[in-house]
Image 1 (cartoon, helix red, strand yellow):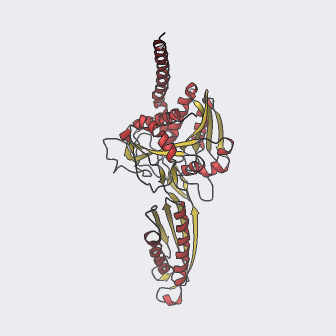
Image 2 (cartoon, rainbow, N blue to C red):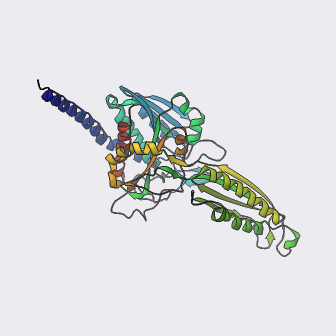
Image 3 (cartoon, rainbow, N blue to C red):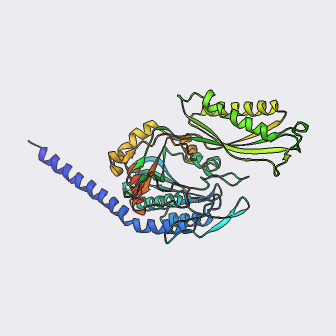
Length: 428
């Protein structure tokens, strides 16, 4: 007896059911766009600085609660975390968005441009979502609603992480991903993997930047005080000139990368960003203060740069009769995309953006505190283009610019990407 027709009918029926399920999911994604854009515009018009994202967090928590999720608030000051359980067994995955804005005065002409001001380092400043975190929040809120409506298609559980202070906590405060983990975010529930995205004007809409292994740099800042002895400019031999000593230190520090770092292993950057000393043309001051940044893609190189910076500043200052006081503030570690996770999930991103839409952006010397999450569990982080295709993305105002612009039509791709990554994640 031939059973093939029966099996073929069963397969066709199953295919129709699966197609219907996927159709329902895709319909909900399309239907969420208007809400997502409303959320984005509201958040953009009402930006909040790091560790001060009170209203944004309240809005997020209210939405997640309305979806019936278990919601935790007040993590790392203003962080919001919610968990959604699917109808089928499977792994716990985490999706992350950052919430804070920047001390930048907006110069775009969009109707919902920020007019908000706040205080930053004692000064009144404009506040703007010049890095696109408003879009990240809206995208993840939208993805949360799509999944909440389709738990019958969710295998496992999802952790939605809305993180404060990615741009760095205010002076004297802790914050961001590091503090969320310090307060136990992954201790009670540890996801198998964590996914994150970041909008960027350096790519056209419909494209993403994805790189395996080290993707974004570790970042540290430093402050160096060179202490001399004040004297009149006409009698330099009567004092110790910290300005001349500082000039030699700046020159010598450049040899750390150019002569002491194996750049065939990983690139690095040491840059001075400010120098201040003295007030009058004929007075040699007591002290000069300098600040700068260190970027690299290898933790061993990072430690060696710190060691060399300490050695050079101390010995060069001493050679001039001055004293160097160096303080290095550890910032974010290298952001590493787990190669195995990336290879496994690449197909999900191709499904959304197409093979040609995935671009290797090369090493990025910017930094991201998503790196802390990716140190704890395998992580995958990608950049999503938001510059209109008819505009040259190589000359578009960059993230952090007061003219930073987002093509909103590109944002639904972020929701699709999160959904596809979760749906395609291996279930066993």
